[in-house]
Image (cartoon, rainbow, N blue to C red; front, side, top):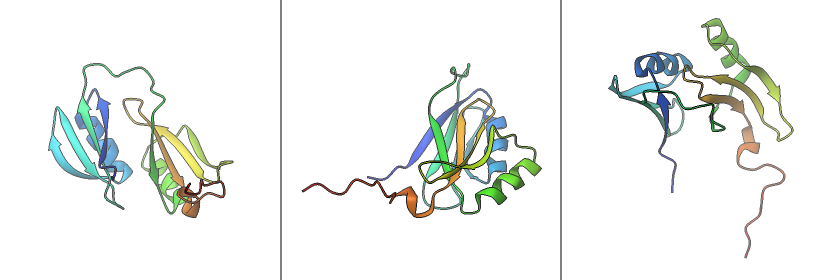
Length: 128
């Protein structure tokens, strides 16, 4: 099994298209005003947005995008006018993370984990 896509709610799909393109995602389906889909620049995952009349209340869900050069990416996005809730910070779980909200308040984390993404020191070993 492989994760294909995650779909987020958006009250303004055109605004979301502009935002996610600024983040660096490639627009691959544009069916505004109802739907848009993006490809991540690395890997095969996609992200889509679909129109809702009202944004849901703050969700605990977080969308994670891994960035090899996290600090540089955050600096570039800030220079492009994207606001961050937190600057890159090293976490106890061995990831470096920065957080922001999209225009509909969907939470996004840009991070770098390297080997620790799939192989942290506390990884569970296969049970026989």
